[in-house]
Amino acid sequence: MKMIPQIAYAAIGEANYQITDANYINASKDETYAIRYIEIDGKNYYLISGLSHDANQFKNPFEEMNKLMAFGKNKLGITDYYYAWTGQDYKAIDTFPYIGKVKEDIYIASCFNKWGISQSSAGAILIKDLIIKGTSKFEEAFNPKRIKINNKFISYNLKMVKTIAKTKIFPQGKNLTLSTNTGKVVKINGKLLGIYKDEEEKLYIVKASCPHMGCGLRFNPIDRTYDCKCHGSRFTYTGKKIDGPAKFDLEKLEESLILSE
Image (cartoon, rainbow, N blue to C red; front, top):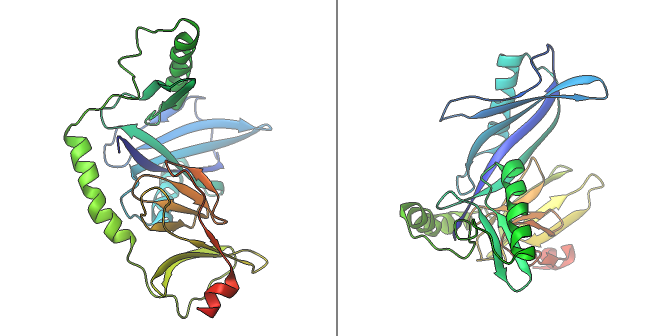
């Protein structure tokens, strides 16, 4: 509840003209884009990322990705994109990341707020000092056990009531049709179920409620994952946990059991 999950979008496309080899970011508060110029096997590419928002906002992933790709086309002349994905990061309610010891022989470093390259390096140095020296002059500032009740903490967690309710609203799945390599969350006999069909038309069915605090999950069509809008847990379409505070995988269900119900 001290960590706010955020979603961002990224895509790699071919560079039609060369810019100085550097990292760029625009100054807009509304639609932030970062641009990296990269070279792979002698070929030039742009990596564009941005449009970050809190995970509890119910935005259409395809619309956000199309907006990001349009920026690349209009500003950099990119016509062909080869990879696209969404990423998730966390920010702390008081800005500083959580780095340090949480219990005997267990240390964490989290909530880098998209500055993972620099802050993870600083975190490694801090944790190294805690292990070897037993102390660090920065340990109190980044103490992961700290609790700061501020407006951001209160407002974000109050929103969870509305978010949880919204995640439970799904259409009944009586006449569900799926194309290959697509998934959907539907309600069948009062249960939220995630159903995915792979390229061989095999169905994968899971309970679409987050094991963390019971929020309903949403299917992410870009990464083919089930995402929790409340606290950021994410799962593969087979139900395996890949991120977030949930401790368990999603419960898998047999197709025959669903059809019999």
